[in-house]
Image (cartoon, rainbow, N blue to C red; front, side, top):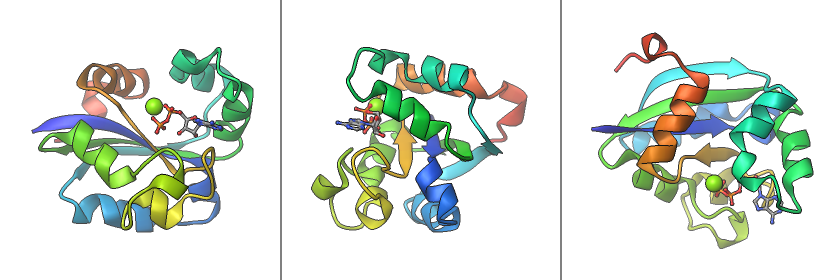
Length: 138
Ligand code: ADP
Ligand code: MG
């Protein structure tokens, strides 16, 4: 068993489809072992996405990620990081496989409904960025 970090992004909370996304997560054998709804501050969003700070889409990404509530989650399962990336689908929903969260729900390459960690190391860093260990009930 291992863990990954997930965000249900503002485009999805706005459309009231967080339950549909959680259903896909659970049907694919990932367990939601922590979850909270928050509105990210600019500082939090910039820190979280600091790896992208020199990208042309950075400012728009921060505006979008702070535009409404998000659901922060810790997911547990076998091979959780890679498994969740597969369930999410490609960054650009046009390239995502049928049945993935992004193919089913994303609006475009920016408003793509979910975040998932891209490595075990980053999962650990991202979980620590938003959760205390006591908030995670395995
Ligand atoms: P992923 O979320 O699939 O790991 P990245 O880490 O490359 O993708 O990018 C982080 C987020 O930045 C994406 O999920 C998306 O919201 C946004 N993004 C990525 N590339 C673009 C782009 N070319 N134009 C606009 N937004 C983008
Ligand atoms: Mg990424």
